[in-house]
Every structure is written in C-alpha cells, then in structure tokens.
Length: 122
Image (cartoon, rainbow, N blue to C red; front, side, top):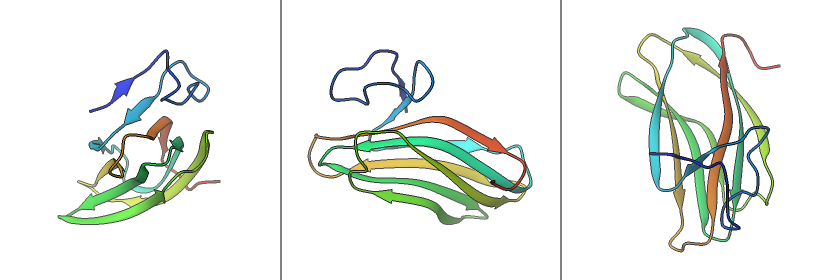
C-alpha cells in the first residue's frame, strides 16, 4: 500500500524529489516484479525523517530465499538522498520495498524516482 502525495503537510517530506508526487511508506511493503535478467541497477531517492523512523529495506526474493540488498535505519535528515544498488536478477526474482517505523508516530519514510536499468550502476 502506498500513497501518492501531491501536497504535503509538515509531517511529510516538504517536496517530492524532482516530481509532483512520491510514495509514502508506513509499515508496509509492495513487490516490484522485475522484467530484467542479469545485472541491474536500482536507482532511487529516499527520505527518512523523524525520531520514530526505523528501517527502509529492499529485499530480493528468489527460490524462497530473501536477501536484503539495501538497508537504512533511523533518521537520515530532512532531505532526499539518492542511492544506487547493483543486484543480479534471475528468472522469477521479485524485489520488495519495505519500510517500518518505531513505536511512535513521529517520522515518515518516502521513496521517489525508482528506476531499474539493465546494466551496472555508474
């Protein structure tokens, strides 16, 4: 489940990263099903701000074996951060983006501009 926001209050990132909307994540996950096989680059921006922010993960699933390929934890500042992750995908691989908060309600995690390309990251 994700929410696209075109206007935001102070609880959310103030602006999307180079676009008019972003995906706000809160104790959820959604699968990104790949169409590529081989080495790929996953490029994206993330925003993790607030005292109750916990984790943002990208998990690769293949043959019932999950592997965390990206992990950030805790407050990363009130700004958008860019990340590129290289991963090898096989037939049937699924990617999962997962976010979780700590026990309170003061913090948000958002992602924007997810791009998967069929070559290594530069």
